[in-house]
Image (cartoon, rainbow, N blue to C red):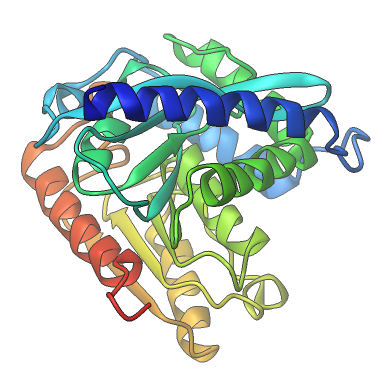
Length: 302
C-alpha cells in the first residue's frame, strides 16, 4: 500500500470513529441569542466594504501549494442535530502527526477560495481543518453573505460549539500536538473567539482584519499568542479599534504582534473577492508563516 493510500484509509477510519463519538455529544444551550449591537454594526460595515465585491475565488486562491497535499471533506462535528462538514487537508508526505490549524472562512462561507488557502497552509507543514459556520451554505453576492453572517451571529453559541468540536477533532482525531486558529474578516473575529474559547489550550491565533475587542474582562484570561494583520484604510475594522485592542493586550502583558499595513483597505489578503493586493498579501503571508512556525513547531524534546 502506498503512503498516500494508507493515509487516506487511516483518515476514513478516523472519520467513522468521530461520527460515532459525535452522536453521543451534548450540544449545550441552543437558545437563540440576540445579535450583539457591536456585531450588528460590524455586519453593516462589512456590507459597505463588500458592496461591489463577490464571493468568487480571488487571486490569492490561485497560488498553488508548495508541496502536494491530501484533502478530504469530513464530518468533524454535530451541531444543533446536524452534521457539520469541513475541509480537512494535510501534506501528502506526512508520517508523524503535525501541528494543526483551525481555519475560519470569510463572510462568503467555506468556498473554493478558502479551501485553496487551507491547502497552502497545509503545505507549510500542518494538518488543517477549514470549518463551516454557515451550515453548508455559501454566498456569491453581498446580500446573501450578509444574511449568512447575521444568522451565525444570532446564534453565537452554535458557532462556539462548532469550534469546540473542531478543536477536539483536530486534537484527538488529527493527533495535532499543537493547534492554532486563523481566519479572514468574519473568520478573523472567530479566530480570536477560538482563542477566547481555549485561552490556555490554543497555541496561536492569526487574525486577518477581523473584529477585535477592547473588553478587558474577555481578554484578561487569554494566554494565546496573537498575530493581528490589519489595513490602514479599512473602514470595516477601523484603525482606532485595532489600536485600542493593541493597547489593552499590552496593558495585560499578552504575547502579541500587530501589523497595520499602510495604503491598503479591507480584505487585502482574502482568498475570495476582488480586493486582493498581491504585494501586501505576500508580506502578510510571510509574517503568518513565520509566526505559526515560531509558536506551533514542536521541538524533539516536546
